[in-house]
Length: 490
Image (cartoon, rainbow, N blue to C red; front, side, top):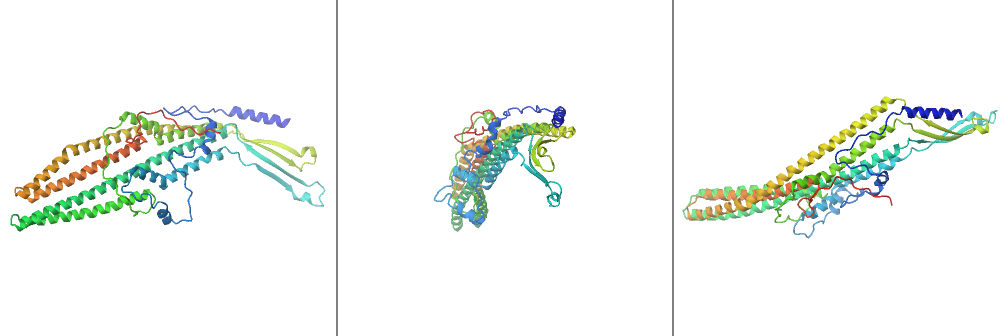
């Protein structure tokens, strides 16, 4: 009875001293409310994959790195006349190690939940008095053994589990963000490869045209109609084309290596040629809808929202530390001579008297929540700015292409024809012909660069929005921010 009274007084004093409640930290604007505990509890073993993403590949350490690169992805595009962009992006997402690393990180984080909610291991207790076991001893053999189990205050395990599950939710959105990054990288590499191929073709066609001009100049020189300088000037220009060919060949090696690196295979593995032409979209979705879609769907933003929820659970858990944890125990003690006293049960608990430490922990947790909320608001502003800037660049690139097609290239082609006819008629000197040829080559290269730049900017815009804005599934309006519903327990 005395023990029960002492225990009751200690518990009452402890509860009175625990002067902290779960903090009211508020919600970030547009931040989703926490999911139910039951749904979060099943998240770690129910939702472990992102749509259209592969599972984590188990590493095989029996293969050498070279064997892995050569054998696993050797024939991705064998027999293809052209390198398809959509299939390249899908292959990169399936094979690139960076995405596999993000998936592995998610799976690792998802497995923190059962650790967070688990009780401490029970402790076996024992003590022996060896001298009492001697035959010469005049007292009974003395020993005790028992078992003890620590039990945290109600709600602590649930909050720890919620915190771990929100971190797993954030890690799942990190996978989506990694998918966006690797998709953008694959598209950029493809457009570099496309541009290099077009520049090679333009350099070859211009060199062929200049060779014909040189033949005309030699014929006129042999007929004493022009000086030898025209022939020599043509030789200089042809040498410059040869030098340009060397540079373009180097660029092609780099472009192929970049794509193969993304595909996790040898840098020198051959690739099909890129398509001859890339289409340019005439109409773009409204920028206002794209901005709101990005705010509602960017994985980066939703990962931050999940981490705010995790920090809120951490703040609530810090308040729970004002309450004691318990340890229940039972033992059989042969140190007592009376048989009635030998079976024993007990209860231990910590007495959280150091209030300043716990108040400081709560304040730290609350400031972490405010910091994550500020990061969330900053991310919204940053994403809206990224979408707006990328949209302007896409629109400007499309306008440049229109000007090239409607005005610049036709005028340059007419100028070259006039210069060629004038040189053959003797009314235009060779330098003006060469200048016209240089100009049209330069403008054709800039035109191809504008096409490539349009698709680059579109890739950047898709990355900023969080979805392909030029595809068939481009967003039209923005839904509210919502984290994915974890699978319910069956």
